[in-house]
Image: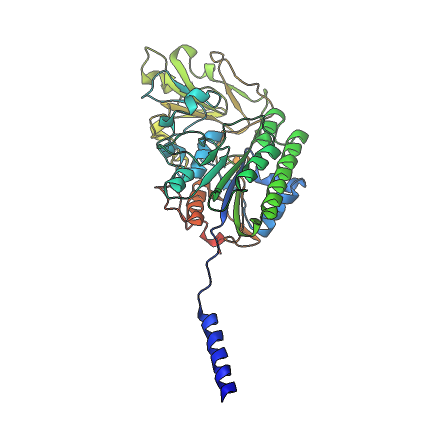
Amino acid sequence: MIFRSLLLAAAFLLAACATKPETPPAPGLVVLVSIDGFRPDYLERGVTPTLSKLAAEGVRAEAMRSSFPTLTFPNHYTIVTGMRPDRNGIVNNTMFDPGHPGVMFSLSNRVVNTQSHWWNDAAPIWVSAEQQGVRTGTMFWPGSEVEIRGVRPQDWVVFDQSMSSASRVDRALSWLDRPAAERPRFLTLYFDIVDTAGHHHGPDSAETNAAVAETDAAMKRFLDGLAARGLAGNANIIVTSDHGMAPVSTERMVDMDAIIAPSLVRYAWHPGPLAGLEPAEGQTLDVLTPALGRHGHVECWKKEAMPARFHFGTHRRVPSVVCMADTGWTLNSASVRRSYAVRGGAHGYDPEDPLMAALFIAHGPAFKRGLVVAPFDNVHVYPHIADLLGVKPEDTDGDLAVLAPARR
């Protein structure tokens, strides 16, 4: 009788253990990586064992479509806000705002580009996360050193292009050495050497391949660091780029002065793959009419008449007329001193062109394994970052459903 009672008690305990809810796992780390200027086809060059393995074992997109314009600052801000440039306010790497006349925003002018008003039209994910009690760290990202809506990431670094890829990894990893309650749950990493090599030497150069290989090695260093800290198994890693890269040449130039007289126009966006036109001082908008339409290898539109697929042209910072060269061509005007040589590669062209396509890889417990998804717009990344963090997202142009098939 006693033996039978013991058996019944044991069975009861086993049943109780079986039905007891499991302790939920500790919140995982979410890592967003940008490799500036990395085209998806760079994975096929045989120099990316780490990234190729992440892609093979996780989710890879055939391509991720950049937002217009296919430039660095606009697309980085789109990825972390889920808003296209026409809504997030970062409409170019160089721009003017009618509310701040005579002041030019540019990548190189930190005094201006760290002023909050340029960025406050949208809240990047680290702002929403910090407001909702999720610690964040940004190892470089456009906008990450700015106080946006009164908030900064817990950890951030002033951009220093001379900092090596390995040093960037080590700095980010150092933030993860803190106790769990103090370290960031959302982390960004930014690498720019692929873009730099692509600009200087062209996307098909040995130098670009070397930069791709070096960045891949930095990613291995980061993943090894996560593993050494016991964080790899519960980390969701999203690797992106902002745009692709196309070869350019001085043999493919468009003379804007032959289209519109320099005396009539002020270039709000200096000619390159794109140009932004305003009437010169003392002139009216109608002087820009001769520029409108197709002229050989360039097409120009009034801001309010841009193709709908660009989702662009309503923001106050968009110039009155926007011109875009055909891929691989460069706009030029003798009235504007060019700040860079036309050589190697460039971006800023039509987002639909495969040469402008961006990278997307997602790997971790939240994502399926060995899945390739169809091309999608980069605005759809943000809702998934917010979802992975358990952060209520801001208003967004992205849709969680677009990449839902990639999730477990």
